[in-house]
Length: 325
Image (cartoon, rainbow, N blue to C red; front, side, top):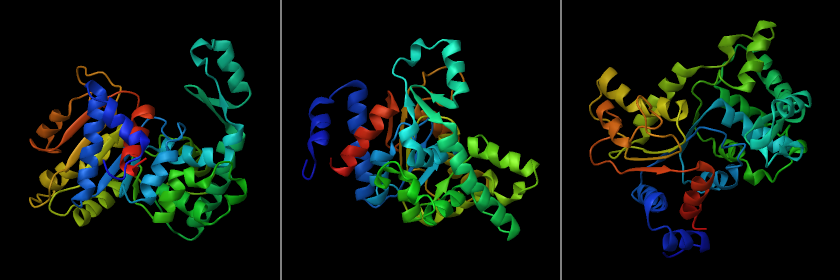
């Protein structure tokens, strides 16, 4: 336990059984992956950015504890929403008690609720929309095309948002990723607030759908990146939540094997999922890791972990261990 701080020492001392023990086992195995030179992918589902996971994930990025991220369109944009509009967010601890009339009142005041946290439409969403529209229109006029995350990188790197920062920028994971030029995969970006903005502006003729690269091109990019970075052991896979953020990228390995017939590509070298999805009939998010063996994503001896708990609790603790906090 050298070079570990009080949080790490606490979980090692007290988290001895059940999901708590799985948390420690997963953290130790993650650290081992990095020690032997394997790279790691983190996938973000749910509302991790609105949950301010950037407070720990940004430092993970800066310290090279993650080499690629896959996230939903919501997590991509909501980190930047929080960056420029944090002071205008509204937290509702008693959200379970809200009536339909209470929800309507939030709507009328332009607050979009995510569990106990309300995102302010004007200060967050419409603010970022203006910057993205300018980037989309510029790309269209120059006959250029970029991935969704690259447009966010452009507005962050330009410095145009700096006067509007409302949190310490070191707590923005997307800003840390932009500074590192970290590769990001955003499958299903079309299912996001900013993509809705984009569709509306395409309808209005300000830009065109082809200006933003889509999911097939993301998979092609990932296939190339995986082959260049997998080495002899493969890449580690750390999945927060379920859904497309995890389902999409993990399939790159069987695609390389089964569809491209590349037999010299290793499978994922490590797998951990934090999930509160109950194992059930037909549920992929709730499936046990061994099911992935049958799909050619993992192997019999791949280190596999599942922590059945709230990711807003578990992920910061695992990151704290990896950071030596």
